Each structure stands twice: as structure tokens, then as C-alpha cells.
Length: 145
Image 1 (cartoon, rainbow, N blue to C red):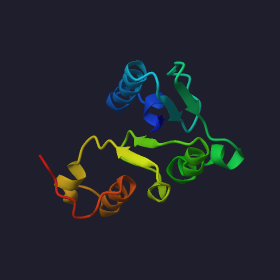
Image 2: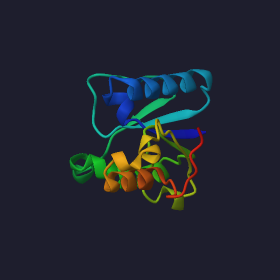
Image 3: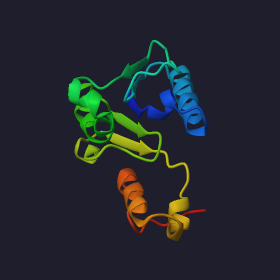
């Protein structure tokens, strides 16, 4: 199986989100070596390297994708996923690309906390809407504790 990850945190985060991402990717690659793992990284990292025979880093290609890497990560990456024949995409930090649901690629999203759902009055309304949209959460999603 070809599995892709939003690897921004894996390559550029020194704390919990990065540790979670790196550990998950390394463990999956080690325990399931027949799969191919594609790590979509918005920019080269000098801090972390995730290496393995079945691990492949994917960086934005072309001037505009490199210049506007956040747009590449949230939208344009879909064409790269299709070109590589990705079967499963895992958004490791609360978001998946816009319109990926139209591709047939299965998706998983890790949502590290739902504090914006439990206490929306403590967040900017626009931020709450963006969090829901990026993770494709319905506005009426029930919260399970």
C-alpha cells in the first residue's frame, strides 16, 4: 500500500506533535515494511531526517509550489498524491487537503485536541470555522469524552 503523510510537523516540530509524527512513521515503516510511506514536507529540514528503504520524502516541485508551500500543502498536494498513486493519506495535525474527498484516496486525520469544540467562546469564531473546515468536521459533530 502507498501511504502518504502531511509531514510538516515530523520534519519541523521539536515537541509533542513532531514526536508523535516521527514515532508513528518510523514504527509503521518498521512493523509494516511492505508498504511505501511518502512524507509530504513543505520545505527541506536540517533538523530531522526520516530515512528508510520504504520512506520517501516529497517536497513541493516548481517555483509556485515552493514559494507558496502552505497552499501546496493544503490544496495543490492533491495532484501529487494522485500522480504517485497514493491509496491512503494521513493528516497528522488536524487537517487534510481541500478536495481530497473527490479523489477516491482514503483519509485519516489526527486531531490532537478538541478544546475549540469544548470551549468555542474562548476562541476566535473564524479560527473555529477554519479548524472544522481543515479537518472536515461537521459543525454539529458530537464530542465524545
